[in-house]
Length: 462
Image (cartoon, rainbow, N blue to C red; front, side):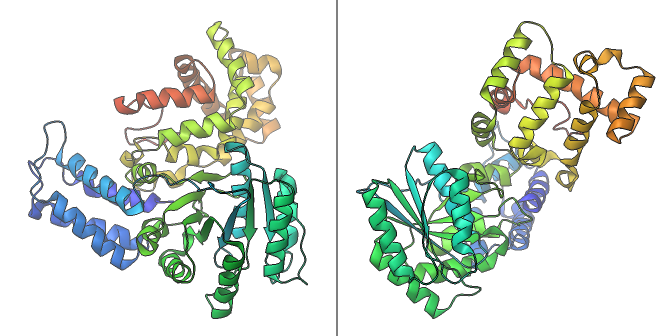
């Protein structure tokens, strides 16, 4: 998400380089480009107008500090306004009530409510150590109840069984009684969606809200719907006392308009953002980090947190100890790191969060291809253990055998060996392991330190 917006804004900021101060004349073109970039990202027009006005008021006439270029000074202003637009800080779920805390999920059909119920349940279970029960009050969509049951079984949380012969209100009240009996901490209620907003739908969910008195009422919205997301959010906010928003499918080909519009339209914070189809692909929404990513400055904090959560700590520690003993980083270790990176969402997800991405040439991010990872893994799998541990033994005949076995070309193998040598240097510097590497990047963030192949206008070759 935000790729095209990041490219447009980065180009705009570079045009301000060399100016002594920010004046109405020299930022007029920049503001025009920012406005166009936001509209192309499908941000709601009233939001764009207000945003541009606030930047203009803050930017015109501002002296540029000796430590900042005019472009950097303008970025600082835009970043502050982006953060303000999206909510300034992450707002956590409010679960301070007598258990069970009821969380009601609302939204249009196809927004990903049922999957988000499971993601949120898993997040509460793992991050907050809460006992969670989920229930589906969607008696209209075929197999909606069964879908939630399968997801609940996968993540090992309580599921309250219901069927489509019951009314949504009776299902919800029975589930609440069961959650109280079992001393459950949080009850998450999945509700029916429609293909469009209609009065019957709104009346039903209003009645559910009245009967359950949820402490959190979250509006689930598809990031790819752009300005339509803002319109549906307003309709739900008018009908229900929403407490927050969950933005889904942000890993898809979304332009980011929903993220920049929903907060201002509803006045409610975006609390979570869905970054994939897996049940663990839910992240708290941090406006400051998202603003940094939009401006091409990366999001190292989220990257470190993701590494801490998804990287196998035992394997990482084993690799770190091995490197400290001077045993080196072989191709078997490299294969393990490739797997760890895929667990973190793949190279595109990682690179998107690294600082310096705004300096990449237009369209460079589109060339990042996770299929290269799979090709590299296939090459390593075609090697003997001796060859993996000691790549120096690879002569011409061995290389031909390996590439035939993996269905690749000798150039692919040579590229892998080159990349392995670069990774060896990084791992030695970071003391081994993906989590340690991410921590190292965090320490290097202010110094422009990036791994080989990243920055300087080049895209890493994997």
